[in-house]
Amino acid sequence: MSHVLTLNAGSSSLKFGLFATTETDPNEMCAGLVDRIGSDDGTIKLKDAEGAVLAQTGPQPIANHAEAVQSALTMIEASVPGAKVTAVGHRVVHGGVDFDAPMVVDDAVLAKLDRLSPFAPLHQPHNLAGIRAAQAAFVDAVQIACFDTAFHRNHPFVNDTFALPMRYYEKGVRRYGFHGLSYDYIAGHMADAFPDLHDGRVVVAHLGNGASMCGMRAGQSVCSTMGFSALDGLPMGTRSGQLDPGVLLYLMEQEQMSASEISDLLYKQSGLLGLSGLSNDMRRLEASGTDAAERAIAYFTFRIRHELGALAAVLGGLDAVVFTGGIGENSRRVRAEVCNGFGWMGLTFDDAANAEDATEISTAGSVVKALVIPTNEELVIARAAAAAAAA
Ligand code: ADP
Image (cartoon, rainbow, N blue to C red; front, side):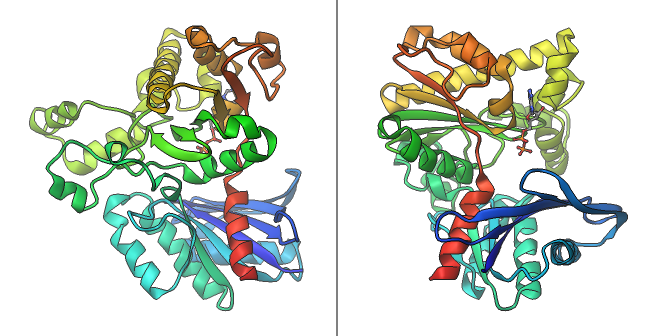
């Protein structure tokens, strides 16, 4: 039996998963996290598919992504002896204009991906460091890049552009959309489990620490709330979401903030954390009950309803809304506050089903269906890696 490894390299963390490749879907054997890369108190943890801890080490120094990949590998080898990795699948945030499907990474592809780093400076260099580390650690394995942008590459021009002079569009200043691996998984799952809805007009709300929504027709992305960067659209744990560009001018001209200060403000200090002053974590906000927490939740659900209405208009109506991501899969309150605002569109919410965390949280007679579907981005990467290994 051979195996595929999935890697999701962030700025200071590396998520990894080992899958056995079978004739059907890759089968997850274990998954882990290397945390606090670049510090003296890094940690590594590996769990089996049921979530039981198989091994953990640290705090210990983990200098860089190459060391992180090596540490992950050492832990996998100790816990799953004899694993034979034939392909490594990587989550890569940006595939630019050209990449609309997973790509086998060779030197030319890597050079193209390097050139996209200015479009996602906080993520792309770390993703590519993960690829380079895996190339060194698995010299015989195929490396596959799976892009967060790829699922959205066939948007019509009006959903792909800003109203700037066209030279910026030509340079790549476009609305790319992100979270594509999650949307790809949901579209595939719906084709199997809800084929009629899949063929219709669906809005998927991926609500986690990062959050976005995607309007799909027949399983294809038509519109995303995220744009040029992963900052646009919904407010997130610490990211602002949609902002009037005049605010940026104010921050630069009146508050004399530098680009890096603004970046820190928009990516790390805003969203649920900024509004509440308490936490970026929805569980903590829901438990808090303070006015500050309530206003953050109210803005979050307001923006989701706002975008749901807009996406439904783009799609020419709505057959289903799907909730996924940590908040979408778990927050009964957020789901209720969003869906209860859509009775006018034909969505009749089923409180009892929502309280039981059922898959279908609209009533049997509801014209617009509301569903909860847990996402699985790692499986999408593992499938691409398994397919490349078999090719
Ligand atoms: P990431 O984007 O980092 O993958 P997740 O998809 O894991 O994030 O989502 C994390 C978010 O999900 C956090 O805000 C967390 O509080 C929220 N969450 C997880 N479980 C619950 C729950 N039971 N109720 C409300 N929110 C939850």
